[in-house]
Length: 299
Image 1: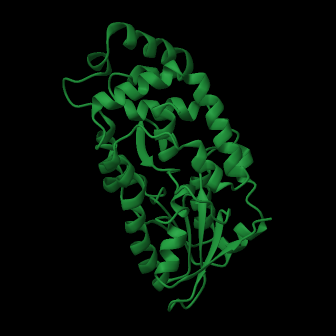
Image 2: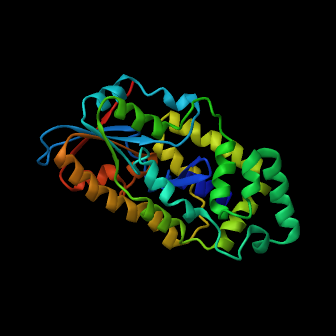
Image 3: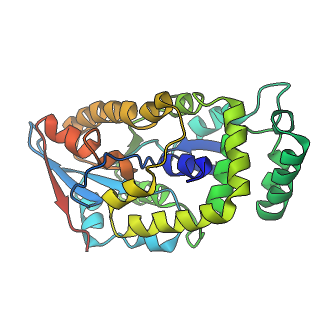
């Protein structure tokens, strides 16, 4: 699997008026299969009311918006919806806009050979429109995310995770995040700019393979096949430090903040699908803490 696709699968990005906010869809699972569900009910262990956990995905393809009655019921019968980040907080997103910019004196052209840079520039000019003007101004990993997202259908006006937060907000629910933007940017900073540039180059050189793999990933998500998604992304060329930071370490933080939030009020948690799976995933982590976590059929 191209490293660029692996990074895209492991995270998700919002691009709006040149302001980027980083989100993650981590799909590095343990090797054994588990119950394949995207929606889970959380109860017990001192909770006064039921909360829910849902595996989401940051795309606008209309197929992922077929959520089923159970998902809407769960949102309607909780009092808050928390994603990885609070996507309603536009001021916080704008305040971190500089985080995506290249350091002074560094550009993509500086990190690649002339032939490599020309290849990326040509692809971006043809496929990502006005954002091609930014290839020397933003860090390569965010340019890679724009390219990846451009390969997917854009049927809906906003990605699924944003839609869920807006839907809950219209219901009068509290909307928030269980991570901070600073925490998510810190993970991305583990990769050097040279590593990011190499990843971007590999992506452009294998773009057709990436497109096919992304559709396969989407089909597995739609079928809620978490164990098969694991097989899809077994190939791993990133560092052990990065792998642990992007999933395992974040799951521990999510677990702690989910517990704190559930004690305050019943909450629907919508996070990247792979945060649910495996021995270090949220489903088993919650069970180890004493919660009853049961799968819910959505249709």
